Length: 375
Image 1: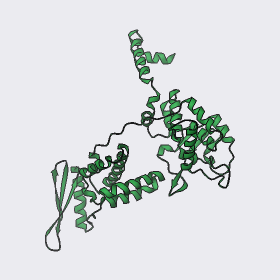
Image 2 (image 1 turned 180 degrees about the vertical axis):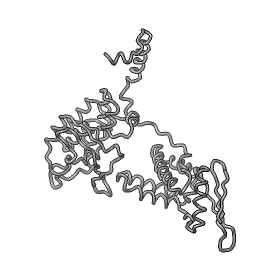
Image 3 (image 1 turned 180 degrees about the horizontal axis):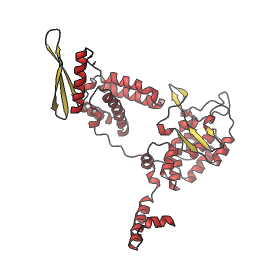
Image 4 (image 1 turned 90 degrees about the vertical axis):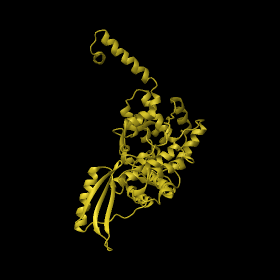
């Protein structure tokens, strides 16, 4: 009859199960290391039951490289094409060549620390942080699958990455850009992006079926992606919150009404042999950069239009949660982290407001905030 015992070892628990004897008559033991005593008790019970029923199967040894390929294939249906390609590149070009031969259940934090230090000598802190994030995501799934009992990436100190400041155009620079693009085929998409804050891939993937001119709303449901050098329409967006509905102004409605409906795409190649076909996002972005340089707007990218949309709205006093919804950010904190610098008076305003509250109480107003609201 199978039996087992549990022994605490450092911050983990060692489970030893007596599994009878092998073909040569030697005692056979199975060892497992887990994080908690509760988990050890559960595993002990499961293993003993399976051994007595004859259904126990010894886990196969899996290498880190084999597991990462397995994990990547499972993630593919739920990832945007560009995200999948970046994961694939990180795994096959970086993680697998360095860590891939190690057995998954024996991968130690020290090996990952060595990987981090090796990559920091060649790559930026932000890039290495992204590598570790991909590895951590994969190993967290391995924990859920009970292939390992802890995620060794959690023990690693992540490289420090300074916050990126969002670069945006002033209203005057925006006028310069629109004037420079006026006669170019990229003008309408540029105008639209400034007024909606949508990403390049979302703008170029917008279809007429998702535009309601009467209600003045566009629905973001898909995007263009370049996959294996081919332009494809994908219905997988960056995050769940990227699926959103955005109100549009009358000038945007008027601009859209003036477009010829050459195909299902709102913004498409206007004439020639490829008329009606979607723009290639890479070519569009390159042409847009040329327009900006011609207007003496150095360092401006199409994504700058998104930053400009959000920054000007926040500076005008539009509530943070409204801007968050328009951009499709999952959390308001993300929006605030990126655009906090466009609210330079917030600290001063909060200090003055607090002083007013205290001053009101000292003058006999028990609820100065409510009093202000009632006015």
